[in-house]
Length: 442
Image 1 (cartoon, one colour):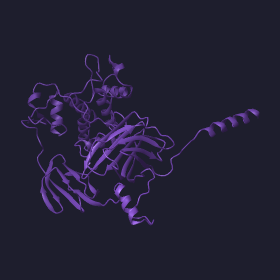
Image 2 (image 1 turned 180 degrees about the vertical axis):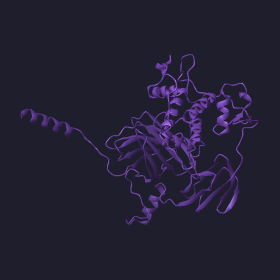
Image 3 (image 1 turned 180 degrees about the horizontal axis):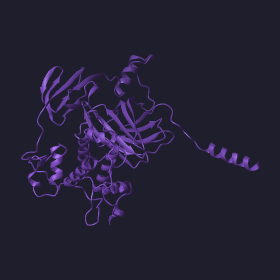
């Protein structure tokens, strides 16, 4: 009995010494100013938050903002982007430290005082990269009283004028732009988008394979067959629509059909002639402008997931944004990368970072191929005996099983008994692997 009482007392002391704070309500952003320095805190943060992406908006187009992180995180970045008569500051930070349900992101050094507006967007991600998005948050400027159109407090005219003179963006006026795309392509962003009065908004138009842009209409007036259109100084509701028309399949310049294959001049005696030709005929790969395929050039991570998306045959028009900090909504590869992320095929090289323009390694390619096969329900039937590569200890643990599965299925091979996991893959190697995948999955 004495032992039980002692244990109870010890536990009581321990728990009373621990200050456990659980987030209540939605997250909020608090910014305190000291001259040109803005100190940023996020409150009511879920306990499993690992990464943060925040969009703050400035009061003019001044540049030169600097972020000084102070959150114990391993990675922080600030990007500036002009949006009409203001700047959007995008802050990325991962492995953040949470203290009392709050994240102290650090401080931003501004080029002038009262530099930030009262609106912000926030995305919080857990360690599995599951995002929770909060749009149009009202920033709390260090507890300073703000006058809004719905305020019922009586304020003198002099006080009101003084407050408006120093308070960032008191009353934002929004206009709606409606974007629609006909059959044969997509427009990004699509649907209804709210734009702050005086700001700009750009739209990107992408035809599907076998189609081309026929006409783009803005507020009932044709602007031609353009692939981008930008609304400047928005001061009214607007609409944009695009139509497409079917065309014959594109063939790389100077290429000729040989049966069911496309022939490239620089592949006449190349070992990858057949797989490349097959994929080119299916519009999964294309040659360069001079008609060559350039088989020994390296391939990027964005290019590789694009090839997989085309093999899948999935409609990627619905993917209009990505949580990856280095994948912008208007990047040509954005819908393909987001398709791969949404389907569990890729997760990035670290939280919030995909590295789309980095060259892809052989082990990364094997890992992504197997993830793709599993996501699409393809059966990778073993047809080769499993081998032990001489450099197997260099293969990262996360990809070793995928390398083994791809090897026994005949999708990948080594050279001289080695796999060379960290070597960058060439366009020819990528084409051979995907061609083997298609043959295996038939």
